[in-house]
Amino acid sequence: MQSEINISELRAGHYVVAIVKQQGNYKLNQAGHIKNDLVIKNLIAKGVESIIIDTDKTLKKSPTAQSNSEVFSLDEDFTPVLPESPDVFEIDKAKKLFNESKRIQRQVFDDAFAGKPLDIEPIHNVTDNTIDAIFKNPDALACVINIRKKDEYLLEHSVSVSVLITIFARFLRIKKEIIQQLAVGAFLHDVGKIMIPEEVLDKPGKLSEQEFTIMKTHVNHSIDIIKNTPGISPISLEVAALHHEKLDGNGYPFNVKGSDISTYGRMISICDIFDALTAHRCYKEGYSHMKAFSILRSLGESGHLDKRLVNLFINCMGVFPVGSLVELGSNKLAIVEKRNLDDPTKPKVKAFYSAKHNHYVAAKNIDLSKEKDFIIKGVRADDFDLDMNKIIEFLLTEG
Image (cartoon, rainbow, N blue to C red; front, side, top):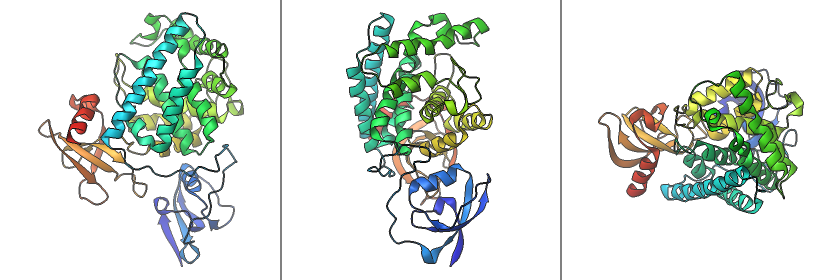
């Protein structure tokens, strides 16, 4: 029997007959079984919203996952799964790893400023630990990225972009040894900023044309520093060199365009912009995730970023990313603990604060797919004069 289902209901093993509703103009070559979750993610990224399946032909067991060699170099031994919800103790461990990464990043900047060759070993060690943590549960470190200190943007940005590209690459099933090189390149991508005068680097207003010319040279400095680092890989250098290039050729420093920008270069551009948009700085508040996603989509539509990869990145992070804050219909604030693939608007959350009475309340786990409560909107801690570090401390106490 044939029936129409929403794309969110599609599963590996379903037999797809036709596309009913979509935002794009994607066409099926032929009817067939869905082989793996990556195929579903690609359909979502192409704008497919509903399809017709033949329920009589649905396989009881999902077929073995196939590699998608059309775009990515994938790890055949790795099958992406939705991780278990990270409790606050996992988040606390992730926070310690994040802080250790910042300590190493600080040493990297100090050595670069002093003209010393960078020591690659601690960078390899901490990115390997980060990759292991993300393969175990990417949501814990994704949550930590939301905890920022406004006076440490330069350090935290590079660490965060390294975490983001690792999460993204895992989602895309890229080979683990490639992910390691991407993580190192992202960790070092902004090291050249240590050579930019502070009055330009930390200027709160719009840069003048002359100041922006100076700012753009940070990529050249990064390239020079990374080239002189023993043990660095070509892929690590590649992602650092391409992180400000645009598909339309209007990026910098080399005006690389189109097919000359590798998949890895396109990925780090998305991660770099997303983190810059959502991070707090001493002179501006970060945007909400939804606002940042909207800006990324606009950049994809305008030809600056890879539109398909933007959609995949948003799918990877989730409509309401784990670790983000939401306001509920019950006038409570909650932290998102686990995504819901069947209905991304109804994740599992932990309510902890009364927005009506402006005080903390006993933490409560809520599965929005089973209870009447609902999300009004995504919010930031600053909207309610709260501090993410104190929120995590409160949840640890409650835990």
